[in-house]
Length: 286
Image (cartoon, rainbow, N blue to C red; front, side, top):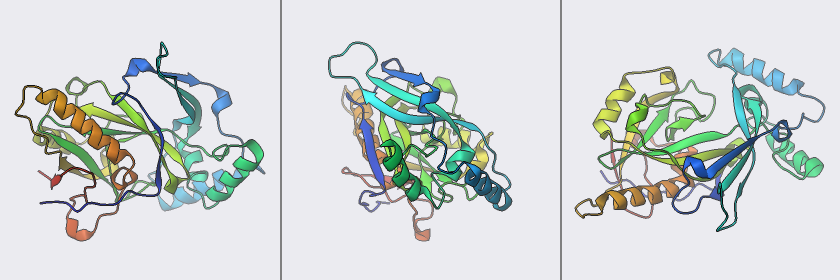
C-alpha cells in the first residue's frame, strides 16, 4: 500500500543538525550544571504544584521522575579537535514539564523569559527527549502508536524513544552505536527539545515485532508497532553502506516532519502512518 506524502509540520523546528551524517558518542560531550536549570517562575512555583495535582486526579497512573534539561547545544567549528558537540544540561522533572511546557501559560512564560532573561525557554522545564530512527535488517523504519494513557501526544504516532530509557524490548547486542542526527524543537510543547538518533538493528521487522509484543516496563506507553519500508536497493557490493546512508537521510527528513511530531492519522489508515519524504515509501504492519 502506497502512503500519501505529507507536508512538513510547522510546529517542529530544527535546532541543530549534526555534520557527516551523524555523530557517534565519543564526539558528543555533556556539561551538567545547576546553572543550566530552569529559572523559578515569576511569582513562585505554586502553579506547577496545582497543575500536577489536577493532572493526577484525571490520570492517576502518572508519576513524577527526574529528567535532564537541555539548556543549549553548540557545535565545534569545522576542523576542531575533540568532541564536536557540547550539550549543556541541567536537571528538571516530569512534573515541572507538565506545569510549564504543557501549561496554558506556556506562551506567556516564553515571553517573560525573553523579557527577563533574553531566553524564551528560561522558565520552562524543557526535559530533553530522545527519538530513534530505528532501521531493521530488512529495511524498515520502526514507529510506535502512543497509548491514551500518556500525558503527551496520546494516541499519536512517534518513533521509539521518549527519555533516555529502554524501549521496544530489543537486546542491546542487536543495536548499533547510535548516531546523533540532530536536535529538534516541538513547538506544540513550547519548544521542548528532542535529540534524534539513527540506530541500525540486526533483527528483521518480524523479530522486532515479536520482541515488542513480549511486553516490558514501558509497555503501557504504546499500543501498536508500525513498520515503514525504506525501499533501498541492496543488490550492489556496497549495499550495506548505501542502505545505512539512505536510512540516515530518510531519518533526518523525519526529524523535522509530522511523524516525529506525532501525527494524527485518520481511522481509515488502520494503524498505517501517512509517510512523508522525498523518496518512495510503503507502509507495512507485519
